[in-house]
View 1 (cartoon, rainbow, N blue to C red):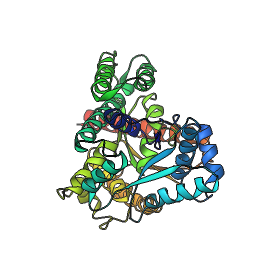
View 2 (view 1 turned 135 degrees about the vertical axis):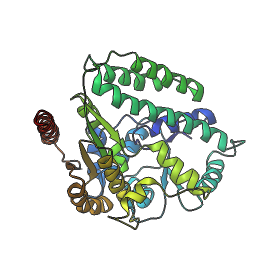
View 3 (view 1 turned 180 degrees about the horizontal axis):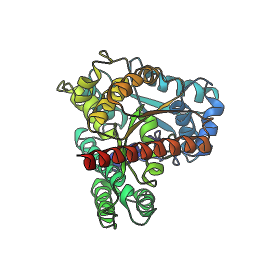
View 4 (view 1 turned 30 degrees about the horizontal axis):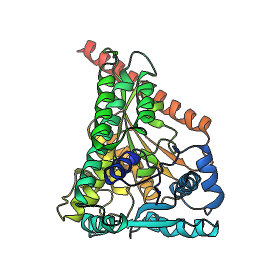
Length: 370
């Protein structure tokens, strides 16, 4: 059995660590690229959302490298993500692929059922399913922290592109590193390299909060590397969703029935009291949080036809009005062009810079008048 899985930001770090710890043979699909999307768009339904199309491309590229089993999460709920496993199965079957698809359903039983399915999936090889999963999650947490650090450093680096080179080298090296201990060490070494980079202490970067649907937020291919684009423009970004946080809250705490109400839910309630699936409440709640923390702007990103984010998108103008914070929405699909995308981002950042300059001039005038 050669197992593969879909790409979704840093999730491959968690899966690689888990399979290394279990001694499972696996195939990491090529990083999402133009061919991945072309394959998925060719075979998936036209109105299917972008993540599903890219997943199909991931699987076909992995099968070309010998994968014969797909592991994907799923589950019931308002978001179409719950249907992915069945849609993948039918599409690949119609294409003539003889491949097994194993769906690890995320439901109200949470981590307990997940561990039981892992035992069955890997033929009873796990003496204790929780230990390999804990180690894999530990690696993902460190990876997410490394990514968050890169957002801070990239906006202030003296040598433009230095952060990108370090992160790119990390992604090259990790594929040949085996086991949790070595993967975490590579992450720590990379973190030290980032911390040693010379920074421009005089640069006060704009701060932009990124909100939206989780896949398009964390997968750089789908958002055209917006965190890098902004960082290389001297903007510090803060992302509202990280995979490790989502897993801890929804799978571990949810499964153990110890999940508590989070800040974003409280902040979202005046605008959207009821969870409607996807990440609509996260989008609205974190937008309010960013506004209260005096961020310069907010960018919402989501795939075309994503209903929860469409609802959030319709409510965001009220948050923009209530807190006087600029908000831009980017909707992505397979037809998204890089030139137009970049033009909108450039214009948004330019507008924020001019707004800040106006504020500073007004403050100076008030100071001298007093």
